[in-house]
Amino acid sequence: MTALLMTGFPGFLGSALLPRLLARPERAGVRALCVVQPQHLKTARQRLSDIEQAHPDIAGRTELVTGDITRRGLGIDPVHAELLDQVTEVWHLAAVYDLAVAKRVAQRVNVDGTARVLEFCAARAGFERLQYISTCYVSGRHHGVFTEDDLDVGQRFHNHYESTKFEAEQLVRDAMAGGLPATIYRPGIVVGDSRTGETQKFDGPYFVARFLRRQPLPVAALPAVDPQVKASLVPRDFVIAAMDQLSVLERSEGRTYALSDPEPPTNREVAAIFAEHLGKRLVWVPLPLGVTRRLLGTVPGLEWVTGLPAELLDYFATPTTYDTTNTVTDLAGTGVSCPRFASYAATLLAFMDDHPEIDTAAMV
Image 1 (cartoon, rainbow, N blue to C red):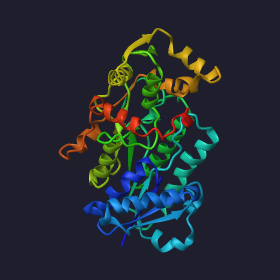
Image 2: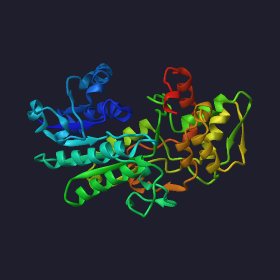
Image 3: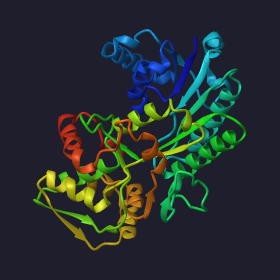
């Protein structure tokens, strides 16, 4: 009997990924051990119950244990030692996904937490694979094409989220060089399901849609952005399907995959597509993004009124594009590919309409 361990449950990606992993024929009989922070245990139990009702074929194969990835042994009670000894695969999804995160918090969770996960993997007898979820934004402020093999290209970073995810991926790569079997996945900006629109939060491009909706007139204004800068948007269902498919390939060991749209829209195109669906005529105001960002960051209440966080504007100005050669090549023939943003934008907006209970105001 073998087991896989997952961090980051019951998060946005982990909740969708878990049933797919257990349903795969290659993992028949494998048990799952999900490390959950104590304050999220109630939510995790409900989420697992919902998953097992929707997927009765995998019911009874998952155990939730409280833990803390920043502690040695991941803070898991030794009473679970027998199951821990069966772990041959680890999915490390847990991280702080916050563009405004404080350095101390980001360092502790993203970097120190990854170091503890690597120690855990190294201590497992017969360990087969670490599946590590990074981010495309380890690229920082890099100008130009950022390949899947790139990491340290001398880039600077917009925030502590980016810099600590960069440090964490470097730790994983160092461990791989030392012999640890691992695969690295770099999602772009993950939005809702392309088929249902389902998401757990409205951030990233949703802020743009929210800003457009707040303008009462049929003409909507946005600060001018570089028409060449592209948006690395990717729907959750593609990210989950791609990781699920790639994780069982022998050739994926040691590789890095940029899980992003190989033909991404520009930021202007994203706004224009949203505006069209919302019945708005879009006007670009010739106001430099730097000025707009300073205003949002210094004028009290302006972020709340506009619904646009100052940190978001950084991603309207950095001309980074992501090469997806490994991803496209290794998914060829599997039926898994990233849909174009224009094909599911209306679905995202419809989900926003149907779920006003998801509080975006708290995220500004």
